[in-house]
Length: 106
Length: 338
Image (tube, rainbow over all chains, first blue to last red; front, side, top):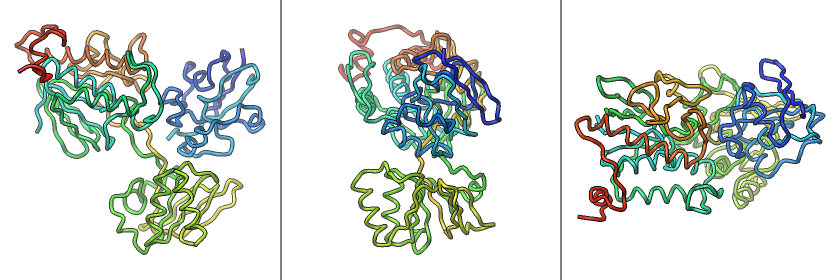
């Protein structure tokens, strides 16, 4: 199973095996990783599953859909490497992905 | 003080249908919501998105679902208290005393929390010092636009609220419009208008900038904005406006002595009652083994919680289960029979 590393805002790092087909958000929520709220449940409607993707992964991820950038406008301290983790579908290509969780979701 | 059989917190689909169920069995109820409109997440988060899993409705949008639920409540007279958050729920002998942020007070044996993921609140700027200026020179909504006349106003955001206000205030104020990227998500005609005003010098546009600091001791004096490439600018400003949409916050619910785990309230599956007698939780905000965050589950939960309310609201009467197709009482309540 692909391994995803989550770095929480207090700099703790946890690497978790996430099943293909789940999202990076679901991997966090199901494993009690703090800081990913996902209030809307994965509908790209709330921007509370915001993560920073490690720079060298940026180009390897699936492109953002139209609505994702709009939602990121509302996220807390968005940066160039911001993504909504509910839009990152886990697959073998994402094995080794590292994401950092912002200090707040809103 | 308002005395009611049941008070519903949250005017989303679950709260609306729960009100319907209460009225059907002859109980009165009122509904409180922090939004300025009825519909909860359906209307705030996805009014135009189609929903495909409402029983017997193959497809409808969040807005259509809300309108249908409001129509279903038409036979009943239900009072809505919008634009206010429930601040306090306190025990008062056999009742609960409920206070809202607008000072409304309710006395009721039954409080049904249909609060979704919490109440919708504006998303705020990240620098901590912003709080000091909030509601004085830094705002997340506008109540009186006259105060901006002749002043420098810095507006943040890329949606319709930010753009509309930038256009409106540019008539009488010096407007800075600041957004984190080059694209705007506002309506195209509005974006075009903004660019025209930028060209004619009526609006100063800063894209790829975000606010990183506010300066001023008593009065706001200036703000610091930082570009993606880390270059910073100091902007003199009298007022700051932030339009980043709304976020759901659990808020005061956390202080009511309820069993809460991961922002959800634990309930039983017979009455959907919390650990406090007479306080129920239904819809997205409740949790129990097997809970599904579906609108249809909220309907079921509300129907059962409404029956549980009967016992506390009418302690000397016995609740009798009846069908809407045949019950004379229910048909009278629906206005279908004299």
